Image 1 (spheres, rainbow, N blue to C red):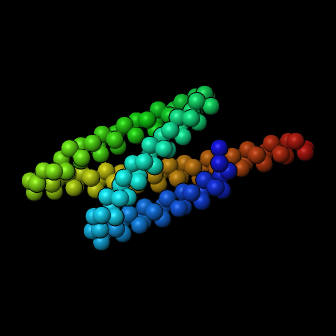
Image 2: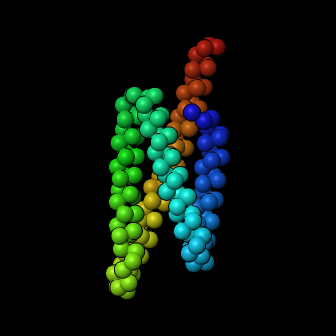
Length: 141
């Protein structure tokens, strides 16, 4: 497992990359967006593999809950991506507008979920630091 500081640095870099994707979207840079989407597909797959490897190493209840949660989210997002891929070739304007609205709403929900998970991560960090301080105090006390 990476040290917490390394994980936070990686999270910061990912947030910056997400900002770049939004900027490309606003600039309607289709080629950059297609390239980024393919890279993200690979990264998601790699992340799932890493999560599964960690899950195999840790078998407690909370890890199981996180795995179930992550799996449910991954499944839902994969389903949404599949639906969009199936409909990408259709040119009906009303349908395309509806799908675009749905895709934008999915992005909003994903960002809201990420922010919520960041809050949870910050809480877990504070809790871990306090627990370590308590343990250190007991060890020297």
